[in-house]
Image 1 (cartoon, rainbow, N blue to C red):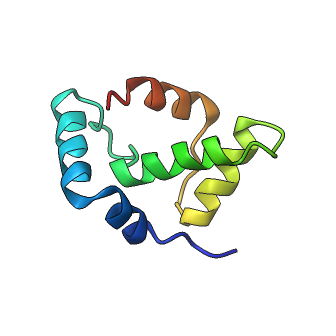
Image 2: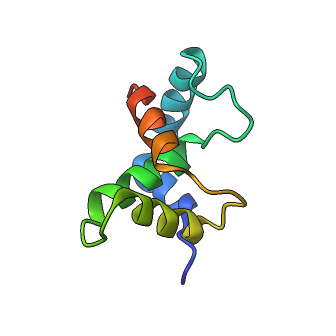
Image 3: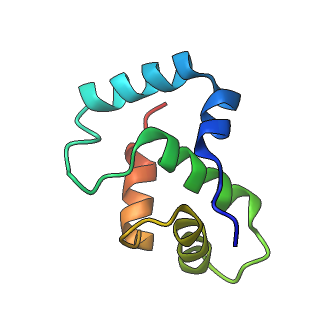
Length: 89
């Protein structure tokens, strides 16, 4: 399983836009927790969910997507949905 190149994703989205989104998230208190996903990682997960409709459920999509990022912890379905709901941009 290849690890995704988040630098490539960041370049595709644009560093200026990512910086602005990150600032907006911090100003709104969306990234206060130590374990909270960064803006690029959150966008990666949202894209994975949008593109991976062949899997049986959100839990499986998140498990595979976080494994590909080599995160040292899992993102639960509930946590992702809450974060996605708060992701204002």
